[in-house]
Length: 400
Image 1 (cartoon, rainbow, N blue to C red):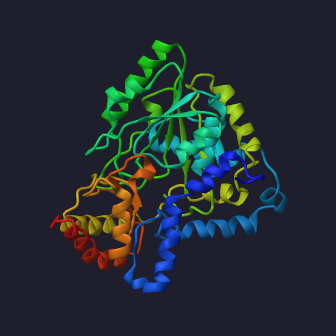
Image 2 (cartoon, rainbow, N blue to C red):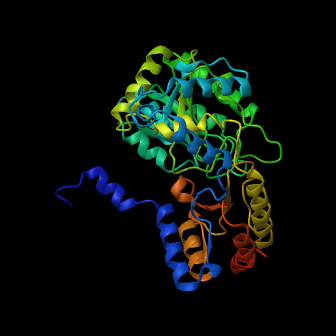
């Protein structure tokens, strides 16, 4: 045991990130076997280019903005011009009535999420999540002394089981996190599901006499297929906080730009709004990147080319069907959640990697063993090349 590193960091060092570890393994295998012989579906790194208008906007901001404004400090909540533009864009798209003060600029959706948790959570408070869920939620909650309360997975649809949800909420529940569309399943919670969730939460608020906040993590909102619509949650539940990132919709995960949306209808909204800018500061970010704040508002109507992911999705579904695999219907994101033919998903991941050079992520990392995640934000030709290996992998388990 280290005499220097904290106990919590020792735990994180020991557990590491299984997703990142598999990504590093893929790089090693490509050197050893050749890139054309390795099929890496491990990491959700957007593969489509950012809209060219965004690159032009960044150049324009650099060329035309006063240096002190561009490179200096601003309000911890972000530039007023950026917050106002985003509020107006949301109002136009979703029929809402937000103003500048409802938007706090953040360093991506993750920063928005931890700011929300910093505001809401006291040590011992519980935060409900639905398995499978993005693996960092548990770490974010623990950072503030919170306890993660997990609603068990509900295959094959992976829509929340409302009875299980209601049974998980108790007098310690402070917040509920949903990721819609969902990482890792690709499932979209439809309007009927959201209304049912809101009813459960409203009944729990009345029962326990305290507000319970719904934190909506939405980096994949625009990546959906077949005309599927993602409900805008502030229409359904007043105590909703929205965490958004342009990382996926604009294919700019490295730029780290997003926002925390706090509706006026939320309980003590004025205090939450005031606390949000303090949260950005005390969590060490100080403010969201200035260049990105000014550039993103010039291209709010632009998106990356989702048709590329739709093509990849179809190719991977065909490969999985040929292999005999079962999977959740991927309505959004660029992930597919595949049922493993054996109980031990880690063993399945090992066999897929070692014998077939197919890299995927164990469902246990998302609190849902017995499944694996395939990220299809990859080169389309790799999916085509991987199809025979996926079919052979299924054959090895007698699936085809």
